[in-house]
Amino acid sequence: MKRMIGAIALALATLGPAVLVTAPTALAQQAANLSGRWEGGYISTNGADVNTFAMTLQQDGNRLTGTVVEVNTFGDATDVLFLTSTIRGTVSGDRVTFTKTYDGSGGQTHSVAYTGRIEPTGRRVTGTFSVEGNSGRFEIVR
Image (cartoon, rainbow, N blue to C red; front, top):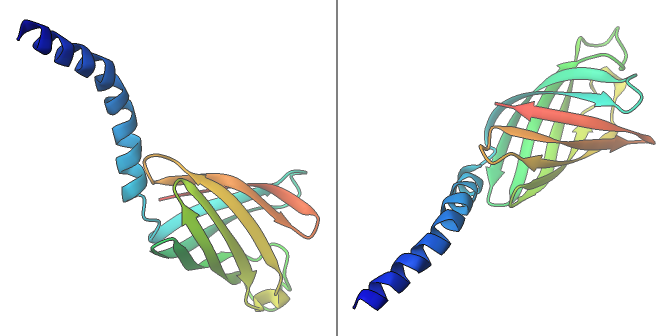
C-alpha cells in the first residue's frame, strides 16, 4: 500500500506542474470568443500608414464577421470623416485570420488581409496585415 501511495504521489508530482501550466491556457482559449467591441490600431512597416479604429466582432464557431470604423486618413476627405468596412474570417485555436473590405466610404473598396494570435487572456490580438504591396503590424484590445 505504501508503495502504491508513493507511486501515486510521484505521478501527481510529475504531472501536477504540467496540468497547472497547460490548463489555464486551454481554458482561456475555450473562453476566448472574440465577439464584442474592440479598439485597435495599425502601423505599416515603413511607418507611413498609421491609424486607430473601433471594431465590432461576432464569432460563431470558427467563423468571424464584423464591422470596422476608422478615421479617414487616406480616402476622399471631402466625402466622409470615417471609413467603414466589413470583416470576414476564421478563428482556429489561438490564431485568427480575416479580410477587411472597405464598403466604398471615402471612395475605398479594397481589401486588407490580417493574420494574428489571440493572447491567452482572450483580451488582445496582435499580428500582421498586408494590402497591395504594403504590410505592417496591428493590435486590437478589449
